[in-house]
Image (cartoon, rainbow, N blue to C red; front, side):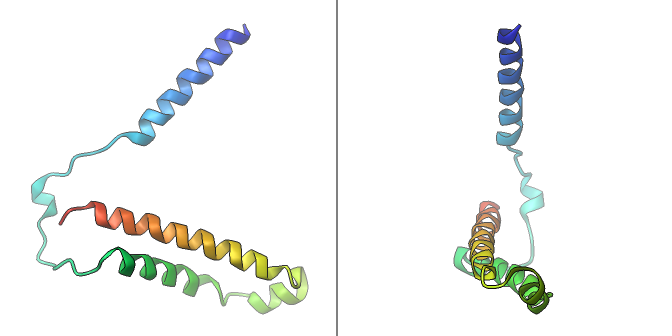
Length: 100
């Protein structure tokens, strides 16, 4: 019984992995645009990082520090900043994957 459950779990995990790895080819007509691509990976990374940081860093910061956390908020912001930077890299890679 344990072996069949294990094999079903493995099969399901393989299906999920295949679904996550699937790719879709883009038609050449959908790639045509009158816009000029002038942003590089660094620009897109900083744009994403700035948008995420700018939208969340000033919202209720003082109240949270005073009422909820105290000095440990520094570690929270550091962790959130690292996460935002990694997220920005993901968006930059996604933007650079589309060839035109």
